[in-house]
Amino acid sequence: MLQLPEIYAENIHRWLPELLYYSLTTLKIGFFSFVLAVLFGVFFALCRTSRNRFLRGFAIGYIEIARGLPIVVVLYIVYFVPPQLFPGINWQWFSDFTAAVLGLGLHGGAILAEVFRSGIEALHKGQREAAISLGMTPAKAMTYIILPQAARIVLPPTGNYAIGLLKDTSLCTLIGVNEIMNGAKSIASSDYQPMAVFVLVAVIYFAMSYPLSLAVRYMERRLRVSG
Image (cartoon, rainbow, N blue to C red):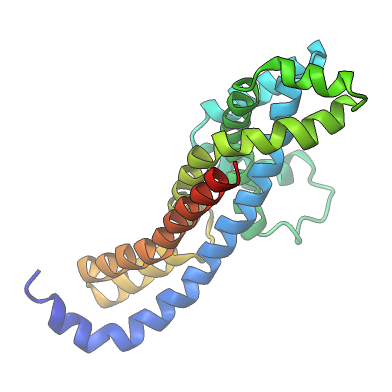
């Protein structure tokens, strides 16, 4: 540990630009997979709370399967299985980046679906019934009455998920994505300085995740004030 300052003084000018370059891929994966997870989460939360038995069963099946599998298994299935099931299709467009976003989005969608469902069900059912009695359609009641209030409830766990998702992108190195952990492994193996490299990676991960934590706190304060 005492040698770290000397190691960084000698190598930081080479390591840092390369790791920051790879961290951009990490941020892109985190952003797009979070957006996809939110879309899946909202859709399946609405299906889960629907009065339609088929939609509820469909949502429950997706949630239980996706949530019950490790992220690594989901990534492997998404990346390796489709080309083998449909070998006649041209899969050149299906890159490791696309598989990473889709795999993390599918897994996260199941988690957020339950988060969003709990937020919707935390509100009194009378609000929806009152909105419908005033002439709103069920879709408008959900959009303008239920979801804005549920957002205040689900924001903290959703923010925690976003921070965890950013760190889970490190698993994408297992399917060959050139994100920060993959770059760090290459540098550590070539320069024989794994401790110094991964300590630097830890600092970069913290620098990326801490602003997310601050943003969630700010949004919580704004929602409390507007409420």
